Amino acid sequence: MKILKTTFYSALITFIRIASGFVASKVIAIITGPTGVALVGTFSNFITIALTFANGAINTGVIKYTADYENDIDKQKRLFGTALKITVYCSFICGVILVIFSGFWANSISSSSLYKWPIISLGLSIVFYALNTLLISILNGRKDIKTYTNVNTIGSIISLVFTIVMVYFFKIVGALYALALSQSIVFIITFFYTINSNWFSFSLFSQKFSRDEAIKLSRFSLMAIVSALLIPLSQIILRNHVASKFSLVDAGYWQGMMRISDAYLMIVTTSLSTYFLPKLSSIKTNKELRSEIIKGYKLILPVVFLMTLLIYFLRFLIIRILFTPDFIVMEKLFYWQLIGDFFKIASYILGYLMLAKAMTRLYIATEVIFTFSYVVLGYFLTDKYGLEGIVIAFGINYIICFLFIAYSFRQLLFGIGTLKEFSDGTN
Image (cartoon, rainbow, N blue to C red; front, side, top):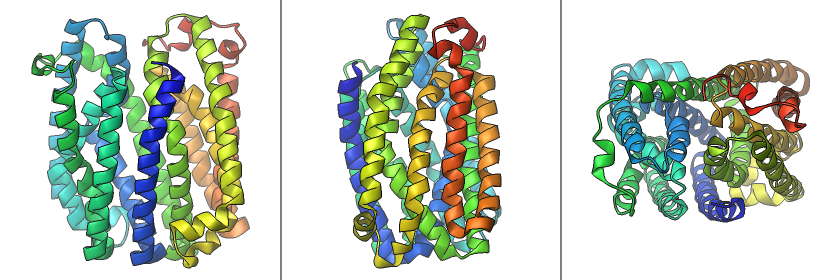
C-alpha cells in the first residue's frame, strides 16, 4: 500500500467526513446557536473517553499486530479472538457503569441536566460502538483500504442524516442522542462489509483468550488510555474555564474553531493512521524507518502549510458558510489556532512512530507534560489576552511539543541511532 494511494483514499474518506461534519455543525449552529455547539462539544469529549475504556483501549495495538501478523493465520486468530473478548467484556462493564452512574457523569462534565439520558443511551449501546471500532481497526491493519473507505464513507453519511433528523426534531437534546447512538447504528454497515470481505472468516475470532496477546495489546492500551483521558479532559477543563470566565457563548466560539481544525486536519490524520501506523509497525531497519519519516514530512507538511494559509485568508467566508453571523467573533481565533495545527501535525508524524514501536514511557511522558502545559497556558493566557489566549496557548504548546519530540528523536533523524534504542524494549 503506497502512501499516495492511501492518501487519495484517505482524502476521499475525509472529504465525506468533513462535508458531513460541516453540514451537521451548520445545522446545530443554526438551530441551537453557540451554546448548543459548546454543549455538544463537551459531550463529544466525554464519549471519546468512554469509548476508549469500552474497547479496552486496544485499537492501536490491533492495527499494529494485524499488520505484523499479515502472513500468519494462527497469530491472527489469537489476536482477533483475544481482541473480541476484551472488547465485549470491557464494553459491557463500561455500559453498566455509564447507566448506573449516569447522573454522576452528567453533573461531572457539566452542570446541565441534559446529559443524563443521552449517557444512559450511550451505556446501553456502547458495545456496538466498541465492536465497530474493533472491525475498523482490523480493516486498517490489514490495509484493506477499499472496504475501509466504503465503511467510513457510508458511515459518515448515515451519521449525518441521523444527526440532522435528531437536531431538527429535538434541538440540543437530539444532537446529544445522535452523538451517543450514531456509531452504534453504523456498526451494522461495518459488519456487513467486513463479513463479505474475501479474507473474513468467523473462525478468525473463535480462538480462546490469549494471555500473551493481551499483554502485547496492553502496552498500547496504556498509551491510548492516557491520550483518551488527557486530551478530552483538558478540553473539558478549558471549555468550562472559558464558559465560567467569559460565557458559554464564548466557549461555543472556541468549540467552533476546534471543529474547523479537527475537520480539515482529518485528511492528514486519517492518512497517518491508515498508512503510517501499519507501515511503521512493519519496518525493521533503521534506514528504512528514517526514510519513511522524512518522506512523510516532505509530503505532508507542505500540504498542511498550504491548507492553513488558505483557511486563514478565507476565514470570514468559512465562518459564514459553516456557522451563522453570530460566530463572526471566531475570526480572531484563527491565526494562533492554525499555527498550532501546523506544529500539531509535525508532532503527530513522530508521535505515530512512538505508537508503532510501543515507546510507552516517552509517549506517556509527552502526553502528560504537554496536556498539563496546555491547561496551565490556557488559564494564564486567557487572563492576559481574553478569549484569544486559549488559541495562543494551543499554538505555543504545540510549537514546544514539536521541538521536544524532534529533540528526543534527534539520533534517529540524523542517522546516528539504532531502531532498538527507540523501541522501549517492548516491540
